[in-house]
Image 1 (tube, rainbow, N blue to C red):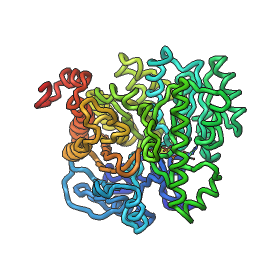
Image 2 (cartoon, rainbow, N blue to C red; image 1 turned 90 degrees about the horizontal axis):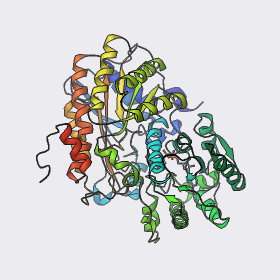
Image 3 (tube, rainbow, N blue to C red; image 1 turned 120 degrees about the horizontal axis):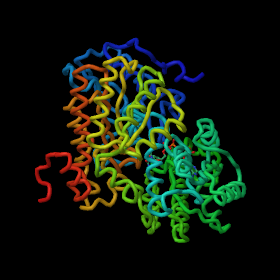
Image 4 (cartoon, rainbow, N blue to C red; image 1 turned 90 degrees about the vertical axis):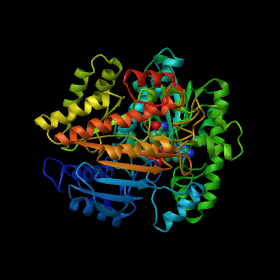
Length: 553
Ligand code: NAD
C-alpha cells in the first residue's frame, strides 16, 4: 500500500462531496489524474511525462482537496505550482480554479533554476495535463499519435502502414500510445524501453502485443509480420541509444523511425547507456550533474543514429520530446535534419482549430461515454474519418480511471458537441455531468518552437503571446478551470502553454459558458494560424465568420 492508495479516492456516481458540480469536477479530475490506473507513479504524485505532477506535495494535495470541498459557487481557488494559495470571491460564471505551473522569468527559465526551486519546495513541474488535472491516461494521446502515423502513411505509403516496420522508444504514459497507433494503421512496431515494468504495463492495457528481451527476437518477429502484412507491436527491453546503432551495424533499417523517451528532462526522464534502472536511480541521487552529462551524451548518440538511419532511407521524425535540441547543444550539428511531427504531419489540423479534445464521465459509468459515441456517429455521420476513429477507439481502447473519450474536433464542431452533451445531462440521458477539456498540445494554446510552433510560415515560432491570450479569453468566457504552464512537453525554457476544462452540468448557465469557451478556444487556433499566413486557416476563418481585424493585410 502506497500513500496514494490512502489519499486518492475514486468518487463516482451522483453524490456530491463539494458545494457544486464544478468544484466536484475539479476534485474528481484531480483524483483521477492520480488514480493508480492512470498515473505513472502516483505515490510521488507523478502523473506522466518525466516528473509531471498533479500537486506539489501531499500536504498541498490535502489542502487542494480541502479547498475544493469548501469552495463556494461564487469563489475561485488559485493554485501556484501545485499549491493552493488563495480563495477569492469571484462570481458564478467565473472559473472555479485558476492554475499557474512552473512559470519562471524567461532569462532564468532552465532546468538548473527549476531544480533549485523544486528542492526548496517552491515549485513543481506541471507538464501539460498533469498539473491541470485533465490527463486521461494513454488514451489522451492515442488519437494524436494515430493521426500522425495515418498522415505519415498517406504521405509515404499509400495510406497504410501494412508491410512496414516502425522503430521507436519510450513506452511511458504518452509514448505508450505509439505501438497501438502503429498497429491501428496496420503496421509493425518495435518500441524500445529501458524499464521492463513500462513494457509490462502497456501489455496489460493492450497497447503493446508482445515483450522481447533481445534485438534478434525483435527483428525476426517484426520482419515475419511485415512480410505477412500483419499488424504487430513488440516491446523490446533495452536502451535506444545502444540499440539503434546496433540495428545499423546489423544492416537492419526500419521504414519509419521516431522516439518518445522523456528526453525533455535529462535528469529524470532519460536513462543513459550502460545503466540499469537501479544504477541510474543511484547515480541520479548521488551525482545529478554526472547523470545529466551522461544522459545528454547518450541522447547525442541516439540522435546521431537516427540521422544515420534517415540517411539510409528511414522516414524519420521528432516526436515532441526535444531530443534534437539536446543533441544539437552537445555539438551534433545535423540534429535538426529530421523534422518535428507538427510541421510534418499535424499543422493542417491546427489550421482548422482541431486538436486533442476530450471528455470524461464524472459518474464513472462507461455507458455515458458509449451514449456519447452514438451521438457522435449520428451527428457527425458525414465525417467518415471521425466515425472510423470512434468505432476503433470503442473496440480497442481500454478505459483508465474515469471513462473518457478523445476525438480531434475542430472549430464549430466542439461547440455543437458541447451543447449536445449539456442537453443530454439536463435531460438525464447521461447520468451525471461531463467534463470537457483538451491537451495543452492544441491548435491555439501553445508556443513551443521545437514542437507545436516549429517552422511557422511567418517565423513566429517563439512568440508566446498566443497561449496567454488563449487562457485569458477562456477564463473570461467562464471555463471551469484554466491553467498557464511553462516547459511542458519539451522542458524548461522551450514552451509556454495553456489548458482549459469546462463542465457540462446540464444548466442553462453551463450551456452559455460552453458556447463561449468552446468557440474562443479552438477559435484561437484558427486565429493564430491566420496570423501566421496559413491559407487553410484563412479559409476556415472566412467560412466560420471569425472576426479577424487585420486578415489579408
Ligand atoms: P514517461 O516519462 O512516462 O516515459 C518515458 C519512457 O522513456 C519511460 O518508460 C522510460 O523508461 C523510457 N526511456 C528513458 N530513457 C530511455 C532510453 N535511453 N531508451 C529507452 N527507453 C528510455 O513520458 P511520456 O509521458 O511517455 O512522454 C514521453 C515524451 O514525449 C516526453 O518528453 C513528453 O514531453 C513527450 N510528449 C510528446 C507528446 C506528443 O504528442 N508528441 C505528447 C506528450 C508528451
